[in-house]
Amino acid sequence: MLVVVKPDKDPSITGGQTKYHAGDQVKVNCTSERSRPAASLEWYINGEKVKTESDKLIQYTPVNDSDGLETSRLGLRFTARPQTLPRWTPASQVSVFLL
Image 1 (cartoon, rainbow, N blue to C red):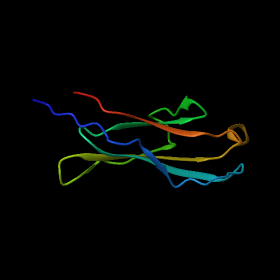
Image 2: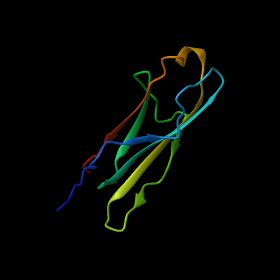
Image 3: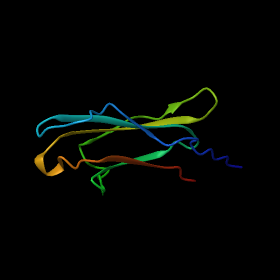
């Protein structure tokens, strides 16, 4: 029997600033806590998915909690450009898949 536990809250985005200028370094993380299996995270910039193979993404290994649930984190790093400002809207999405 496979037991699936969905995260009990939305993912959180941390590390960002309220305002960016062209040339600024954007460094943010998306974290989804306590699920099983580990949540799969994706980043979107202005509604466009950041490709998995992009060098903008920082992949972290899921952390195992003492109760067997896992916490997932995905980082996003890039240089702000005029075409992404001032309308840059960070968004992340979480999915838990059955294997």
